[in-house]
Length: 97
Image (cartoon, rainbow, N blue to C red; front, side, top):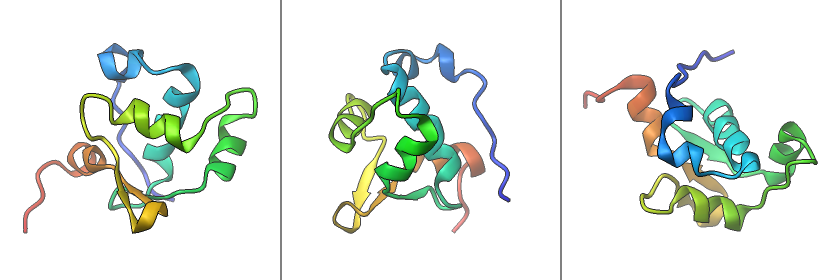
C-alpha cells in the first residue's frame, strides 16, 4: 500500500473550489489511484464505481475542467493514460536527475 501526502489547503484553492462536486471527488481519486510517477491508467468505469453513481463523471468534462487555465493533465498513449505533473511536484518536490 502506497502512502500519499495530501494538501490540507486544497479546498481553499480557486481551482478546487470551482470544480463541480463529482470532479472534486474524481481529482482526489486520481491522486490516490495514480502510480508513483503520477500516471493514471484511464478507467472511468472503475472511477465511477468508487466515486458513486450519484456523482456522474465523464472524460471529456474532466479534461475540460482540469485543464482550464492550466495544463494539469497530460494525455498519453492515445488517451489510455493520464499524467498528473503536479503529483510529482507535490509528493516528491524537485527531482534530482
